[in-house]
Length: 354
Image (cartoon, rainbow, N blue to C red):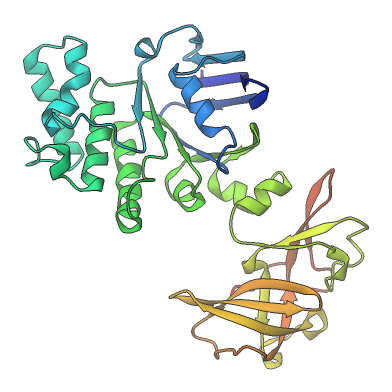
């Protein structure tokens, strides 16, 4: 039996259909990322799971029990918000203990549980401090500890790192992944940051315009996107409006077929760097962007502007230079379907990474 089951979930806000027939299952102990653009329905799904919003249709089940009509406090849920929502007049200890006091837990048990969480979340020594005396990262750790204190069955996280600067956000991603593994709690977190979802989640659910576009591991979604939206939303890519203009794809792409090409599908360099010259075409370097460990290169091939990467170990290219470009594979799609295609002129079935 799955820990969480959602069947044909729907939600309207007036005439706006925010969530459209969404169904999914989540195994116990898994960390799921709800990923998608702003306004796509992610937070509405989270709020219906928590009981803060009521669905207009469909069922929500925890361990096989329908919870649609249960109030939030009876669902066994911990909730972490992006703005911390800590009580300013309470210390770290008091904030973490708040939910336990509401449940009238004995004082000795409260202290034991709070100190356990203080240790677990790396807040030892900060128990007597107030929220204004903490950094953003520390305040969010208190919010996590407070949510975990009543030992919920499900942890819901609504863009928990959105209010934190980039460096601390990176550190907290790793910390959250380790914390969830140690606690073993089923967790769902909303984010619009694909790097965050890919790094942290066991599985990703891509939500767009109220619909579930695809659910799977980060790797599966990246290498085998189920819809054109997923292909364009996950990872960096270039859209070519007429796929038949690409050498090696002209016979596999009919009218109205577009191509999505990821940077790692493209090999680019000087003529002498290629052994399979028949599959290459001429391009012109337009821009180079230093990315620390590599160059991101914008190269113009005919009427198409492509993006790829080049190793720092290879000779440096310059804007305006002529180069050879080999597209190893492309994700082709039209209004009805999508499919992955290898360059028909290429002998080596695997892309050459640069």
